[in-house]
Image 1 (cartoon, rainbow, N blue to C red):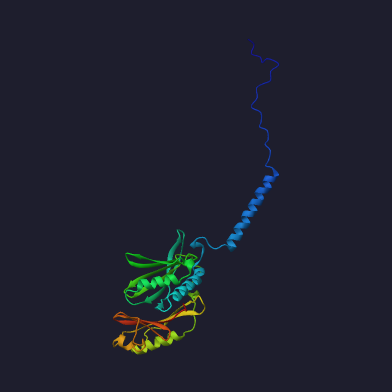
Image 2 (cartoon, rainbow, N blue to C red):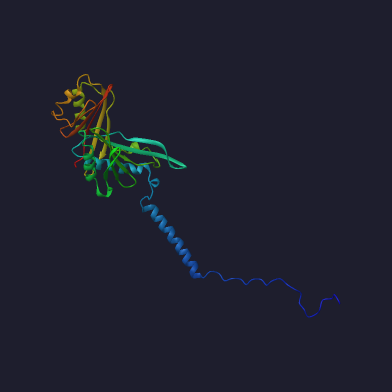
Length: 287
């Protein structure tokens, strides 16, 4: 057989090239572009106008006014009790995320009541708070606990700390610290509380050994609640007997560790230690 190629047959070839496909319809391209523009616009609007959806999106400085307002609400709800605003506490270096640190702000309200009345006081305060806070008091193995949500990721708690003593705490949780929040806390001039503090110190015969510390919060109905406090030397005589005239003979609490009373609308707490006396005088908010 001859090895020559037979005539009339074309040489073998590869598969034919695929036909070029048709592009996207113009209407589909236009719809995709419009959808992308809409998403970009909604993202920009949400960033500028929507409230933060997680705590980490609100800085500590932005949370300070809400904390101040929450303290005012608590003071107004505790109207009639003997209380004092404690200096704010800042915890620096907490972790906002695994890659960023921040700060946490806590503020306290210290309360004095007759021993055994702590739960009634916490329940009265819970009832006086805004309904949207969903405040409530439950009994735990460690005693009654008040819990509430002040909004904007601000937590509120209350508990007994000793017989006749309770403490309310407002806390931000760890937030980005964009500035020193201590500079944003409200400050105002002294008032009747300064006179009550001076009267208590004079009665004790214990002049202040450190500068007065002033703490205040905005009241929900306007005005401010303000506490001034001072460390003094230990009283040389019976503090209960020395303070009795200022209390009108009817203190709210009178124990070896604490003497609490109200005088001319000012709440006075006198904490008695072996080496010093801590005196706080507070004007509050209308309930």
